[in-house]
Amino acid sequence: MCGIVGFVNLKQNINTEKYQHVLSDMSQSITHRGPNEHNNYYDEHALLAHRRLIVVDPEGGKQPMLLQYHENNYCLTYNGQIYNTKELREELERNGFTFSTHSDVEVLLKSYAFWGYDVVSHLNGIFAFAIWNSSKQELFVARDHFGIKPFYYTIFDDTFIFASEVKSLFQYPGIEVKIGKEGICELFGLGPAHTAGNGIFKDIYELPPAHFAIWNKDGLHKKRYWHLESKPHTDSLGTTCDIVKNLLEDSIKRQLVSDVPLCTFLSGGLDSSIISLYASNYCKENGLPPLHTFSVDYVDNDKHFHKTDFQPNSDNYYIDIMQKKLGSQHTAIVLDTPELASALEDAMLARDYPGMADVDSSLLLFCKKVKPFATVSLTGECADEIFAGYPWFFREDALNSNTFPWSIAIKERQDLLAEDIAKKVDLQSYIDFRYQESLQDCSIGETDDEETIEKKKISHLTLNWFMQTLLDRSDRMAMYNGFEIRVPFCDYRLAEYVWNIPWSMKALKGREKGLLRYVMKGILPDEIVDRKKSPYPKTWNPSYCKCVKEMLSKIMDNKDAPINSLLNRNYILEILNTNGSAFTRPWFGQLMTGPQLMAYLCQVNMWLEKYQPKIEI
Image (cartoon, rainbow, N blue to C red; front, side):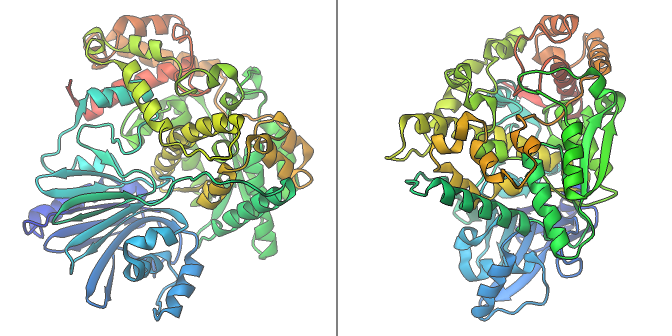
């Protein structure tokens, strides 16, 4: 896990002191992603840098890595982990390649030398990388199937400039921090979700998931290399369960490769319990020390917890069951209200724009407190997207909403815009456009029944929008602490298979993640298998609401606060006076309710102060 930056200009010599300093500034801005090492590469037309978080092969994985193969000279800067490194190495060895390290970096670079652009079809992993071919004067860049690793870019003054995070791009001279009408629609109509490929800021772009691109004398050329494709599912229930189990177990084992301490996040929910079980078994089978598991909670949370449709129970009872089952070394991280609120700004800086408020800041703090014990964690994230675990898969109001079901407060979002902004920005039209555009990309099979078609559409939206938001959150909050999160449920092979399982089988017995529960029956304790889905834990302590209300009140006491130029001051004051209930529906998903909305508004003001975007509408 690392941070990458670089730029290529084919029309002038950029290997000068001026541009070397620019590269250094870009790299410095994402030191948090790679605190262990940093190195640069200089060429007449390409400058690349790498910030390294050491996970595998401390000596052999140094970057940028160089290779001369036949008539070509390559340089690689790469962020990620290739999980099928062993198989790739063996195939390359059969074709005459030799290796001096056991790092996936060397395997990736030599894979590109051998397969060229088609390398992406051979990779199983999480990755964002750039390979400069000085012989051909060409840059190749690629991003993993689900966009777990980030890749942003812009084109300025005949230069292709890229980085793991947007903040690095703003270090390049001449690139301005600007927000246009589309950016406002993304932030306040869709946010914290965003359209794949959209970098929020004007003229800043994201390489979409499952895409590669080439920058050469003819400009930029992008190509999608993978998507979920509908095919007939002919396997019986028994065979389906066996395949799901085998794919999942294989994914988890592949992601346990690490030369640094590794752990799992354990909430006592079905998903994290599955990951922790297989990880624990792996440790026992290979004579490793007991698995270290971690959970997150909040001061006085059980005291103030109250049951809701979205959060039916708290975690501690179930964590205790699983800890005893695993025999793991368990550490409970307990966060307090003041630190949760004070980390809102760091969480915003980690994303480069307002995000999921304390849903972000809590993960940021969680990773920070786990980092002294481990550098890598496996989590149960993405199981709900792959196996249909969210309430909106089953609720008629969500299914019939004709919009993104986790973000139905469209009128309230529009009303939140300042009057002069609202006259120029129609959030409803933009949301409708993105919604319909996304559905047109959904693959439907000829043999799919009506119910399966309906659920595939909601699955498509969930995978490509909601899951992307959570993956962004995981990467930014973890990497802000030089910490790596892995998501075994997000293995593209597992997603491909589960995508085509008929709804009646996927939602076995009418339950969310019904098939997954059935697969794990008898393997996990019944209390875990039967437990109703409970989301990432948030604080129920009323002191948090009080804290963020005070923060927002202090902001609104200043009539010159930048938030007043962008959002509706009177509406914000009404939100304050009602502890957030004036905004009648959640801002996003099931976790961003009243306190989180006030925290989000604090983040908006922090963002405007720190980034000072020029608003061009």
